[in-house]
Image (cartoon, rainbow, N blue to C red; front, side, top):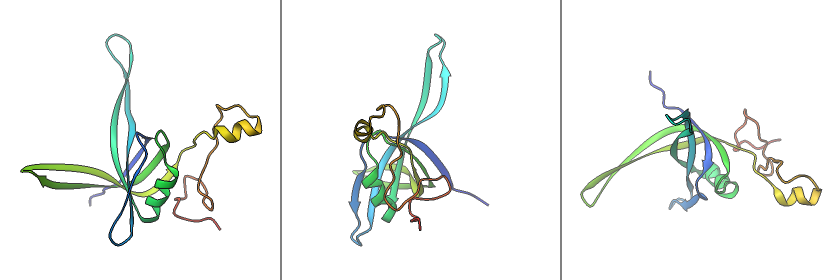
Length: 145
């Protein structure tokens, strides 16, 4: 038995890119910056080992990602990996992507609202799409009742 399952947690390095297939299905792609290890070098300075994960979201998940995710936003993606291979001008290229099956939005600052309410700006408020609930057990694709 084999299993193709991946969880990636990180922050977007730039705003998502959105395209639509001829059938009208939304295709949203973005890259996550993830820290995979922390260590101290020979001089005693802390170092971080990082990876960049290519993510692709289809349909409703793609629309939600395009609307709610921005550069620097934290997100946790669960899904499977898919590797595409193609040839261009005689050279072969490959790209491995994480195909999103579940997406959990991380909290992001809402500075304008904090200022209006007189709260400190360094506090964080969760912002999720209307009609959706942010829990670890629920995907943003499942509307709340």
